[in-house]
Length: 471
Image (cartoon, one colour):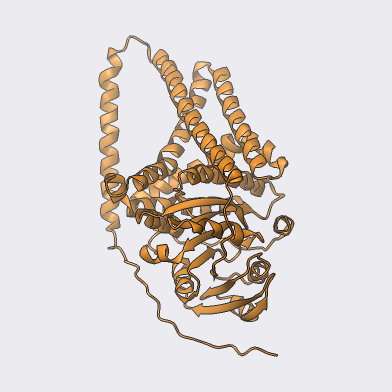
């Protein structure tokens, strides 16, 4: 029997506060003035102190390079092993800790914009989730392709893995992902919501493994495990290793102290009360996932990581697409940090949040600058002052560290071992390229240069997903 489709109009609680528009010209002028002042001070320090040294200029540069190398390696080792040890402790605790089954009704929000190529596969994958009670809400954010038509065909009660699943469709004018998520959240019936991307495909036990954490009333959200779906290409395989080593390992470490700093866009499970207290998603940054996470943390909620709540996402296959994506991520994170700067400057508001923000500031701004400077400095020293062997061993040490981390992360997540050899060029080529992009994004963000959102052109894929979902 053909189901009758009912249409509703809903009033949204949109508490987004639009910040005052920045005076771009004034900000650029201020950045230029401060950069000039700092540069002048550094030049004066060099001119004043250089005659006081007993070393020649060449000797001073060689000794400075050695000291810089030692400091850089110390910071690198501390960062590596602190993250690695905390991640190991969390995974160890996770494997021996048992949580009772907890199966509340969950609303899955799927915001889509021009996802006609992948939306059907995404919804069909959601119908295969191994979970007793949930609904699916598709929010069409003013798509200009056939997304609305494809999604409309799926509306109604569809047969799921364990029961009938209600699939709803909300059509709204284009307003961005944040407003689309807000519309779905406020229409939803569950006390818990899973927010995802339109192209994400979830593992079958995703909800069952993630929702059980909410037995603890202090938990406000659960971060899932994001993996690259479209592999078997050089650039996407590098990103697959990056997601496992560069994103999921730090997220495991943060899970130990229940303070995950970014609930990823492809999969995040939230207590609706926490979202409501935070004022829902905001669209005044290019990283709405980082912003909502910081708002929830500021309200005192604990955030954890669930490695078995897996979402497969399509990664950029072309270099310019990848760099545009990381450019946007960096600017969005910096915007979110600036938006919450009062917590950076005043630890009495929420000390945990202050530590998280300083960590994000370091990872987004300080560490990329250190990495770029170290590579440039040591290459110059090697070329002009005969220290090529020292630089070679420095690079070799970093490569060994990356390989150790890659082997551990791939073993912990039962990933494909063929990703390990990519660690040879992971830090020295791939991450350096990403850090240069981050540095450019940082400069343009501080100068107030406008940017557009941009969107990855989807091609649709499912090889990795179909294999992993069966596990």
